[in-house]
Figure 1: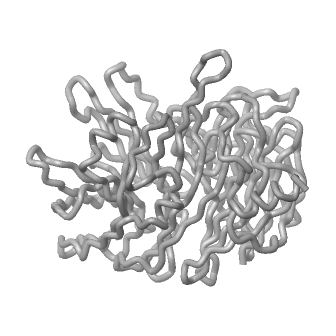
Figure 2: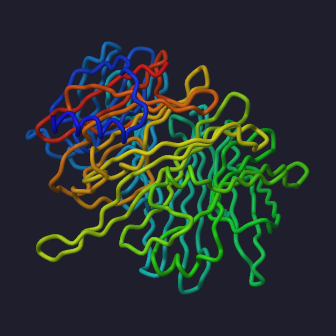
Figure 3: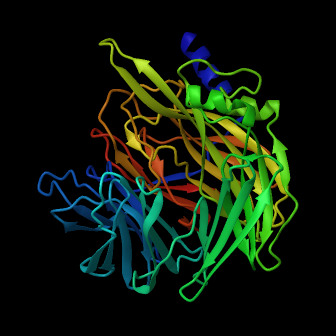
Length: 500
């Protein structure tokens, strides 16, 4: 009787649960565990890279696994016995696999082109391996065009002593990592996107000495650089992201920061927001459209869980909102979302304090091209991110009938009980950060938002506890193709989930 009550309690916590849809499990390999990523797909195959091979015969290096459409492993090729890499951007063309590896500190990158048929490396080149002093801060940002035809990288070095940018290099590549142009140029970047025509579009913001907020926009190509500036007095900008770029119009969104809580922010190391905003900036007329403000409601704060608008959290538990990848819609709008992460400090029996980050909730907005909110909703979930980096990233997809689908891992208890993890910016992989005790997620759930933003949840039943990682572009005939990794007692592989 006690077990029945516990199970019912878990279901109530998860919300309205529907019947699970069909899940296909691919052939497994015991060495597909950590530091693995799904590279992409073509008409015949899916491609997976393991950055660190646990095969006793090849303890280091990277390995590419090829799966056919029946989810069977048809090829396994070990690429390198010397280096450990993580694939952070990948491109699959007719005859080649192009992979971008970033350094662990995201200061440099390596571009490798692999022959798809033989899996032999055709070329490999390092970029941005500058020697920097301790007072110099290097920053590397990368992005791809929506159609995956182009790849952009910008490396900036900031000198703390001089309080200035001492070097900034931009490079545009095609999807086989051939350099199209290179230039020494810097633009302030808070948000950025790359168009299919090779325009690097950025947005940034700052406050002057009088407290006036200014926004800077730029469009950079190999031949030209155009910059724009405007001011904003409606509210204090907490962050800024680009949702879409359509014919010179930049659709932006972000969080509204509550200025009265700045002291509280510093004291408790917690970002504190009161709402969400959108607007469109027209680069042709150099004007801002109507600013749309949406203050968080009581329902939002319930989803945000421990972010309470009426009381200041004085415990050691703090929270922050992490923007997830934007899903572009056919009408020029976008689906945007924020992940709610919690930072918890826990003292163990030996007196040592360990810091954990765990995911609690997600807020979602469907935006029209003019910035108006079509619908807004969210859901609460319970997950231990544990010993894997990048666990904040939740695979999410837009179906042909404009439903938004999240595939989440959930734990029965919102209690971190594994090793410390470090937040990082790359996508589509799981990397083991630190071994530690604890369990993998107990439940995998499909969370679906219909055209009106109504949410339903479906339990995904598999025979293994696992962590999944995917990309919204890797969808095959209405099915999300993802990689799953487990622990040393359970092999990893591909999983295909029907999201139609």
